[in-house]
Length: 225
Ligand code: ATP
Ligand code: MG
Image (cartoon, rainbow, N blue to C red):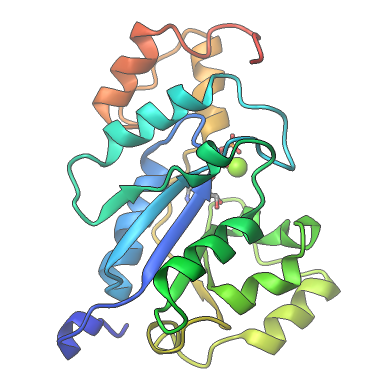
């Protein structure tokens, strides 16, 4: 692993989108591992307003956002990017990448971090083949998901696969890299299911987030907002 901090320069903006319904330690450990391994300057969590390919979140965007804010307050390299929530409507990654690219300029590496499950669904995303023009795609392992590449996706990978992870720190966009992390087998669905069964969610997410969920009685019934 090449850490640009050792070269006297840390660059690159990593982003990790998600529904964060709720944010959990699987998201947070992934974020921290990526920052430590690649030496990017920062990682922004981007909560979506309305996911395009799954049902509506079971709580409000404001509640999901509040939990992300609580979860990251102790690490200065992590931040939250509210643009999809401010934009409202269906949250398309391509819009977000174009937006961030125009803010950071053409030369700064922009890295979109995706779990293997999200990456495998990418051929269903709006304008997906254009994503790589705006950012690199850094795919992280996720327990239960193997790289089972359908032909469309394997051709995409062949075209853009980085020869070394260093390319993600040098070029602004255009490369795909698969990184195996010591993943945690935690999902938001698992946390919602535990809540519904009135079982403990302790140690799966940061304590302030757990407290917020309990105090606001979140995920206890089937109400969809
Ligand atoms: P749900 O169970 O509701 O689908 P989730 O746990 O998958 O929720 P998302 O908000 O959908 O969480 O995920 C956001 C991003 O984080 C996705 O790219 C996903 O692959 C990744 N991710 C989520 N959990 C993990 C984990 N435990 N390890 C690695 N990546 C993860
Ligand atoms: Mg998911």
